[in-house]
Length: 336
Image (cartoon, rainbow, N blue to C red; front, side, top):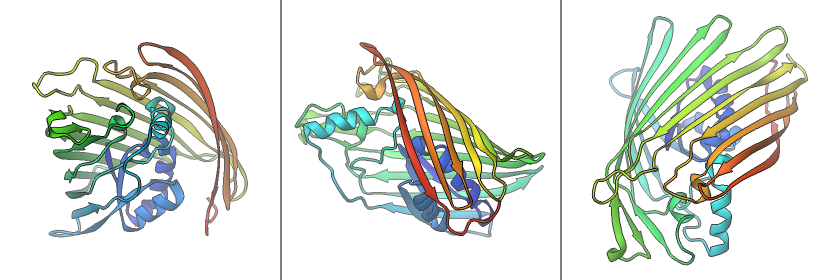
């Protein structure tokens, strides 16, 4: 999924906070941003970001964006590397995973911003075209030693963003829709082994409520939902079990710490319906819960996150747990 993150100068801190909150999800997406926003997302949220040019078109409301993706690095993996990738890229694990073998491509779009009835609304649309590459989902399902290549068609992305103040809190809503033309898949680079398919439309919705109070120097309640419809094969027939739903939620913040040291606490959970058409871990259904505990000062944030959940591939069901420790530093950060 492709996501564009755009913020005015006065909203960049909130954008970075939002990216940190959804970092595991965003790390699995192709993230685009303009200028300074992109630089801060790279430095402060640990994301790989495609930075775009932006400029006014017919006034300050309407903006034209254009971007080019020129990838470098590994494009082929051996059998052991594929086994590792198949495990760590499973959506149920929510581990940060950059795009693998993304092809050269370009994006062209328009963004319009309006203010009405207390809401700031942003409407966006873009068209994307990429050359041949190997996406993670195909890399992990390919036989060892074989090379699976994808030649994408056109992708159209529509976005609606909304932002407003609610009492002493701020509410953000984002709705994304992706639509695709037919793609071609070739195994082993042989034209005779190629076939066509078409991804079904995808729609995702994200909402976040930022709040603060006497005890909370900052806090946030976030919820995201995504539906991917079934894709069609070369005959135009829908593939059973290739549609799925994903729900992620979190609640957390900094208790105390206004201008000093605070306790970082949080709860999160996610549910994935899974993709029954494949028994690989990347299509596993998952129910996972997690908790975060840490400390935040004006200069750094230290956090420990643990999670526990169940995973079902359709042929096996297992439970698992994991944890991560993160340390972030803030340069020139003032009192909250």
